[in-house]
Image (cartoon, rainbow, N blue to C red; front, side, top):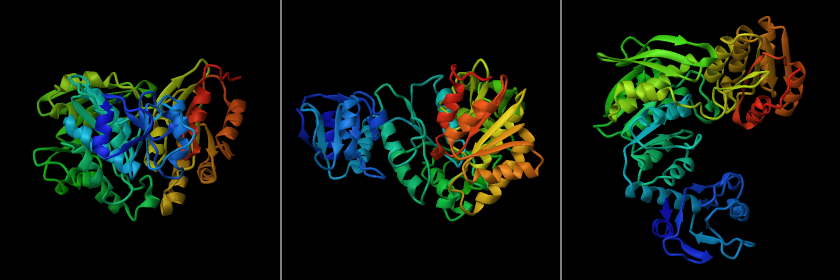
Length: 460
């Protein structure tokens, strides 16, 4: 929560519309009018669309103020509007001011896969003892990270912030805002997501290393021992390094890992002479490292190992990420938020553990550049071993389907988009099927997963 005085002092803005009310307070910020919450401040950012075109819509949805670069016509008389030279810069400055006013230790999390799940696991583990400020959804860029700090309250005791990477220097810049004391790097696979935006996997690794390079000498770098590229980054930090994973030399180690199908995962966490039984309610062996990273951050900040382990049993799957959604007729594995080669392989492994008929609905994996053809072919070969039915969505997914057919898969389909996929699935699905939905974010397969998971989605 912050006040109008906080906003004006941090940004140097001036009120150009509406009445100034002393002590006026706001709850958080937004840049998308469609999801702006009542009482928040709308920032009219310029990107693919000009946020100024949506200021009136934001006020219609209950925002308490708007930050703009130029005046906007057609607003309610009482609408409070603050003008600044550049709204994105104003957002950053306000975030910095609120961080300075409420300094709390921060955990920064990056990697090519697993950031959001690791963030949620870390928030759950720290929640055993603390009130946690954490990134909403996948707010991990120059907009999302500042917005996280606009939600800070005096009662927050620790922050868990997801940090993304698109260009060199971006993570270093975001770390100057977050000021992490603990840094987590999850994984950097050989076929990383968004590969087309970067020159090489080594370039991606260097970008991710900016997180641990920003840590203070008395900080902690948590590195995935099971990922050779991540563990090789240890010399890039002056902070203490702890390796986590299933590797025998990991200081924080998982043993006795037992996947229990769609019901989740169990393992024993070991650190020195201490052990704790961990139960995750989310399926997928690949989540072991997310849980271990969470335990590492929590114990560093004073949460006992056994308490952190118990807290992990309460975590919810992030929306559209390995969420098992059950209806009377179907089980839907909703992993539709995004897709990369490593994430598709992990999701198919979970599907393969399900009973009954297994249906893989796989969309294009975008932004893979020169890795695209091989990655889609490999996904098809994997699908042929883990699923009984395959539906490919999009042009690139045709390569997935073709490779699956070559590998001996009999029942396969290709469709153009999610709407066509829904019509097909309503025709071919049977009661008792388990359906995996996964594809790149721009395909909007979350809507397909939602439609399949509705109680009204009757299957013949």
